[in-house]
Image (cartoon, rainbow, N blue to C red; front, side):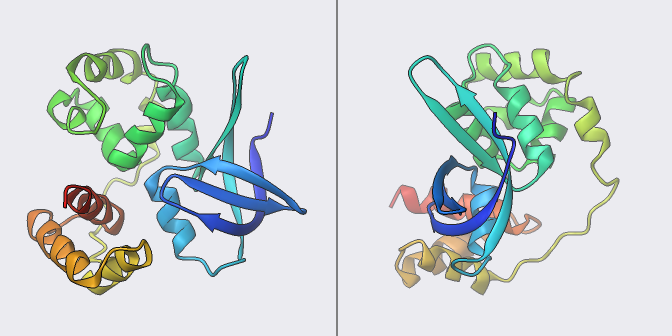
Length: 199
């Protein structure tokens, strides 16, 4: 089983990254938070990803994560009834790991059902089956965290690099920032991407 890979970035999209390890290109499915970290690196730069190897009778898939906490949370998510690896990837793309842990600890169903693909029943199963299982991950979070105050221009550039027109990117960023004034970069990027997907 592959648990960790270190190699050069060959290509990346918000869902899939190709990592060149010793001349072999590994395809890894990633959440948006990991994609954002990768996009901050230079083309061809060497990076390390924590990996979950998912094996089925008819397929083998690799899922990559920037932090060990994200991988551990992913592995607990796929242990929930009705949640497979693809939905777990969507969950981690729809909500930052620390926010997800907070929502699970607080049994905040309203927050969980806002994640794309997560309905009320799935949210209830997540709370019931994970609340106690993720207590150790939640305990690792810092007690307080100052808002990072990301620059809107960085968000616009990230969206332009993804292929969106600058005018549309600026509008999506302005609206998202107004709705989520204290949000961190990754959360604002997700909000802007959701808005642009509806255009």
